[in-house]
Length: 110
Figure (spheres, rainbow, N blue to C red):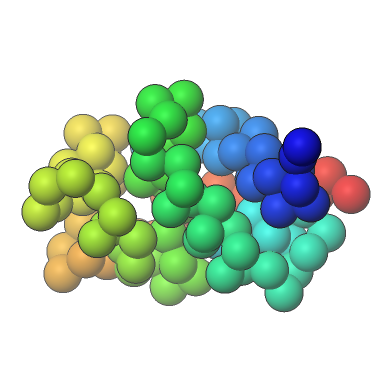
């Protein structure tokens, strides 16, 4: 039986699938788009739970400062960084260079 959290996670995944290649968004931006602005941490949990799903580009979701805060959930030492760099996003010291330029704002889906 689906739980309230399962539904929230699926709504997070719907937004994550929309993030264009070469762009990133934040946990908080997704939470705000879902009408749950104080649920950034729960968005993080959803992203962590999605790593076995190839249809979810979890590497495109970072913290509000452009830090690769979820990188330890990816296989390999630098997989998250490598995936972002393969899309043209430069990463230095676990932080996206020109974060504002690459930031994608999800549409509010209240």
